[in-house]
Amino acid sequence: MNHVLPVVQVKPPARPDLRGAITPPALPIPDLQNKPEQQRAEDMRQFLTAAALALVLMTFMSAGLGWAVAGRVLRPLRMIIKTARGITARNLHQRLDARGPDDEIKDLADTIDGLLDRLQSAFEAQRAFVANASHELRTPLTFERSLLEITLADPGASAQDLRAVCERLLAGNQSQERVIEALLTLARSQRGLDQLHDLDVAKAVTTALNSAREQAAARGLRLETQLDVACTSGDPTLVERLAVNLLDNAVRHNTSRGGWVRIRTGLDAGRPTLCVSNSGPTIPADQVDSLFEPFRRLATVRTGQEDGSGLGLSIVAAIAAAHNARLDAHALPEGGLRVRISFQPA
Image (cartoon, rainbow, N blue to C red; front, side, top):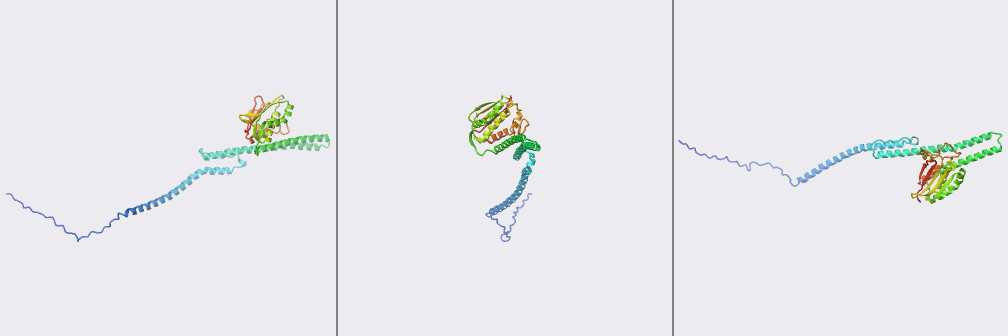
């Protein structure tokens, strides 16, 4: 038997009407228009604060780093200054002797060392010059004093003896006068030229030949001359002294009778040139340069001897240097010396 269940319709519960019964809380509504400007200002303030702090920090770091680097870089300079201030005429041998890489500071130290080398050489040459000059002047004075004392101590000295002593003293006085004149000429040449005048080297040599011919004839020497025009600028008196000293040296040290002296002036490669060659004894090649130093001779003779005072060629070198002239000296293989001086064109 079939049973049919009745259909029951269920209605959903009725929703209560909450309107007016529950009031929702009031929520703040953001200001969508003003918020971006405020955020931008806040970001800018934070950025400026961070930038100021970073700037202060970088300033201190840079100052510290710069102080450290500067101290490391300037330390060699301080050592150079301290060492250079302690160098005097008594310790010119001391050098900076900088170590390290080849940079500007080492170049500066090497340059100062080179300057000290030149100063030391100049001081040593000056000391040697003063010592030699003192010896050259003191030796004849000592001899003259001894000669006078011996003569005056002899009660039986005749008028003829006294006259002979006076003649010897006069000869010694003339020798000292020549040495002093040579020293003054050397000092004047080393000081430089005050004024320049146009001159012809050939004319200066012609004047010098007038005093050399008699001496050459007495020694039996042959003078060979070729005097062409050689115009330059300089001091005529000093150039004449240069020629006189060159000719005197060529004649004085020409020991072989029947020897020769050749004098030539003219243009050589566009430069006014004076060349003096002479026969004579063989000169070692390594001693040629020393002949142009004051009081240097090949033989150990002193003032009053036939070989002179040892100042002639040093005066030649000083006069050539004062005129910016180039001096070349060579020992001849067969004996003798050749000296060539090239002046600046006028």
